[in-house]
Image 1 (tube, one colour):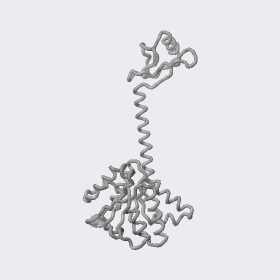
Image 2: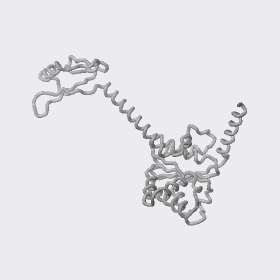
Image 3: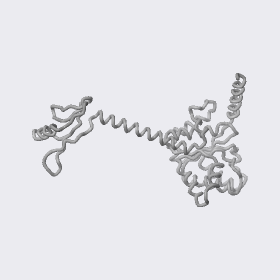
Image 4: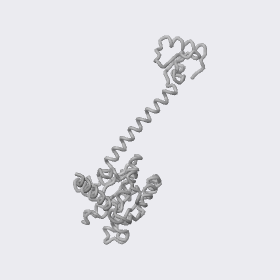
Length: 285
């Protein structure tokens, strides 16, 4: 703000005659400008008229107005972020049960889950270095839950993630025209993280194997992380039965660090608990 000389003060006084004040404003005798009753900060400044004589006395924000504006902006950004995360989850977690695969729902019985936490905490490095994971082991040992926890945690951080499986991908490819298949496969690489659940359950037809390879190869070339879960043994992946599988597995092994899941069947244990709860409800009825 410029120096309040006698000339400037005269201009301020003339302008003040027609000035309307809000209930939380007052004229500060020291400079003749509008101030805030709450913080005593200035809500008016003086600017020389460019190319001519005289002055402008435009309004400005006092400190408490600036703070309120910043808080409103932060709230709006948070609201937009939450809406964006909600949309990302709707797109990336197409099966509703995946919403429950979160760290908060972890029972703490699987020590391998520490690796899931570490992957999320070091996501920037994983993304930069194109570091993926190959989660292998017996049925029901927590591979999908592990991958889902990572997916949900990153989605909550506003990271684009898609968790899907090859039967779903193959069904989608079957439903589109040949010229649209390449566009669909390319769209999978728009996600910062792609999670393929249950590799190996898809049909071993020539068409299916070719499409699986195309998806994996496209992801490989995109240089973005991939997480794969499978019930296959690591030995089966390292020594595939034919060239079609070898092309797929080689790319996965090159970019995905193997993580073994062993121990008890959590899915079977959960099913037994559900059955027991159902029997109890029936007994009470």
